[in-house]
Image 1 (cartoon, each protein chain N blue to C red):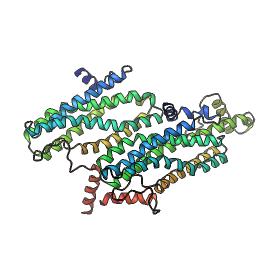
Image 2 (image 1 turned 90 degrees about the horizontal axis):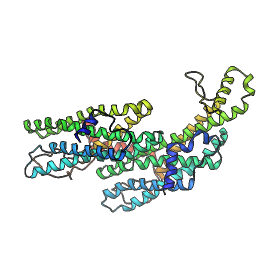
Image 3 (image 1 turned 180 degrees about the vertical axis):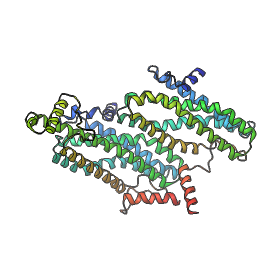
Image 4 (image 1 turned 120 degrees about the vertical axis):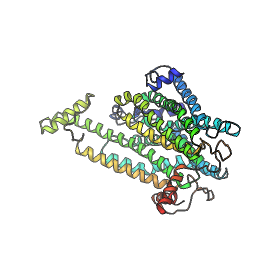
Length: 221
Length: 277
């Protein structure tokens, strides 16, 4: 499995070569889940790992893969239809593996950041700070994962420049769904002063509506 | 059922609207099976749309779910019924070889594209229905998904119509071709191009900025462009006439609401509500 992770990071053609498509998809999915669990567990360890807080570790470990795979699954159907419409169906199997490999790359990079997160948790006890730090980690990991994505996608774009446009459309839809997914699956870090829950019932809502309201009250004073 | 969706798949892949097929002036799409696939996809998206009202009222507004599932396919077929006569008339005016039946088939194929896109966005709509309380947000989200579906579906229609015009022209000029050789140089090139086209080679563009095709071709294209705009407007207003699709959770369930306002004002109002809520 570590070998596969290495292959993904180096964008070796292993993931996108023809043959054994289903098996490769499963392996890539497994990579996302395993590395997602590792980072999730670290993420949830903010308030300690004993007693009640242990559950936060478990919940976060489940939630990180859920966030990534859920967003992926929700965005996939429309991506598939648009690919077909542009006449790029024959490349779809390739792009699917490239995108999933990018997801795997993202979780692997995140896992490599886990020691930083632990160090941060050990040094600072501020809850807001922990959230900000994790946001920063997710942001940098997403940024770094673009490398993987670009390298996997290069041959496709060379073959047909429309893949570049499709890739952008994918990233827009993925981000749109992913932001809301992350908002819905809160808390990932878990405020130590609040009881540990899988989901926060009372703050169930829409990230974009909140954002608009915040901007609106800011403008309106 | 698999056969019906295979037909839809063929349209999505563009196999049903290849130039070589269009040259015969016929579009071979089995409308019956495709219509069933369209209805099923419409029902699917209707369920996604209606789920918001049901979730927000804790299951009371399950009627909205049923109503939306019926209304989404209805919306598309009614829009088709309203716009079809004018499509055929323009099509005949411009002089493409499309028969009434083929024009209808083409329009149904475009509906297929729209609903395939729409249904593929369904999971995202359900996800937001599950996680959001804001009615204006859901309105705008659905307007956005329908716009996406409309742009792609009408894009398909426009491309196919343009292909038809080009095919038509190449057929016509290959008949006139030998005669026009004595004409001016440009005409010669055109004839050369169309001969190449009839031999299956792509036509050579004359200059970097030259548009392919004759003046009439361009006029035909702009007519079709205007017509697709009409289709979009009719669809938008039809959706307003058939509302509610999403169902405001604070209002009681109704099959149809009172006649008032219009689609575009409603979208503006939703935007304002989103900001002021």
